[in-house]
Amino acid sequence: MRGWAVWLAGLAIASGCASHAPQTGAEVEAAPILILDDAERFAALLEGGILPDADVLQADYIDKGTRGIEIFTPYRIEDGVNLAANLAAEPERYRRAIEVCLPAAREMQAQTSATLEGVSELLDVATLVPDGAYPNPVPAYIVFGAGNSGGTAAPDGLVMGLEVLCDGRDAAEIRQVLEEFVAHEVTHSYQGQVRDGSEGQGLLSIVLTEGFADFVMELSLGRPSLTDAERAAYGLAHEPQLWAELKADIDAGVMDNADWLYGQGRGGRVNDLGYWIGKRICEAYYAQADDKTAALQTLLKLDDPAAILAASGYAGRFAPD
Image (cartoon, rainbow, N blue to C red):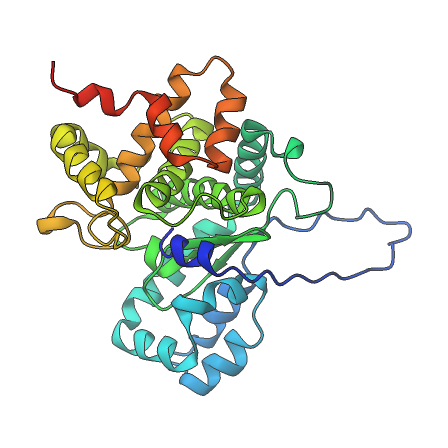
């Protein structure tokens, strides 16, 4: 989820293709949509209790990585030196993710496929993206990162950092969180497929980008988000004040989003409250729309963030009588 603004500003799409001779006399098994190759290779490097050094991590993990590692390396893994330093600092964090959360992820192939199909159908992306331009469904990769990101996305893939998502969670919770991140990050992937950059990099644009991904996550899964629970509780208790502060920053043209996204909240408040307010604006826009699919596609493309805010009626909730 973190670093989306950076990704939007400087996306470089790398793609590849492979051809395989058709199998004869045997059923062709569908390629997995949840790809754990990188996570399995990382786990193998930690077998025996000895931590791999930077050279091993670079050569045997990063350099041999899938498209998921390629997406996750800039701004996150960075390189073998950075990954080795984080692994050495918190080895038990990684070992627990391997022992508790990787087995849970292995069981999520069917669940992930259903989640990806659900989001694709909800947004009706087939009507927005030319056939063959991008994979659909978009593959989901499980990797181990440098302890600084739970997930990100590119138009051709979404990636989840297991050591971050696993923190403090048991196997049942990690399955729920992975499902949520799949829905959130694949929404980002579709945003990258349909946008042309006209939405800009202002604070309102970024808040709506993240909020829409959370809105789609909850709408497609049909339940409140576990990862959003703390933000929601705090937000509902302080919504008028939060909106007044965010609106002031938007009106002032504040570009530093650190108080609202991707870090510690202002004054020690709950982190990432911009996600929650963005989701509330998207909910309001969707609620007032007669054509729900068209509303979702307007939010997805985000051609005019200010017009979406105005049409939503969200700000009017806090206007003085």
